[in-house]
Length: 256
Ligand SMILES: O=C(CO)COP(=O)(O)O
Image (cartoon, rainbow, N blue to C red; front, side, top):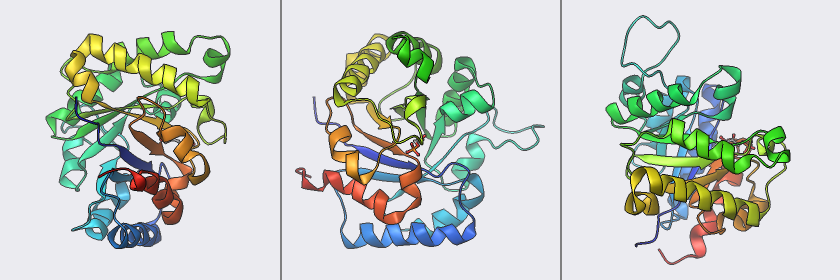
């Protein structure tokens, strides 16, 4: 099995006005000046900034992603945005099933599954998020919850080339708390084994499994070199070009 190429993806969430594109331009400048060829970098700004971000990133190695999509390609769905629209705006990937959408918008595993299929239909990579709540973590239910979310959310046609799984414990998002490296290793190992049952070992062995939840420059090396961790999904720290670059740069020491 060849080594999995890591991915560091930033999720700006509902942050950023047009002026924030200067932060993306600053990131681009840092990556252009000191590329990190060992890993892929991606930024997922809000949908309103996608075309502006596409222009800022033109010719850059930084990939562009989006944060959510509707499951249908078009139609009478006021306020929604289809995967095809995201692709048209320059995105090559879309986050689906983030816990903030599961919680704020009542998104079910079935809906996340449909959104992942929509991403494939539009030629986008689906970044499928899973993660347990604090109560589930405290009750020792993490592995059961993740198994069930993966079985419900990851389409059987998922392939390593078009699918990324992001493990984001809800209690670690925006809190400064993180699971311990052994906990992350256990969960990521389980995710890979569930993917193996669904997709076969060869696809599962090549699928990127990201860790997300309070990843910062200070803890990135500790979290990203855990076995079965193939990168990060970064929230708050992705809003600052220097912080995001420093997280990406933890891979700079590796053979390219
Ligand atoms: O939800 C996240 C990324 O999708 C993580 O957010 P924070 O990095 O701000 O904890």
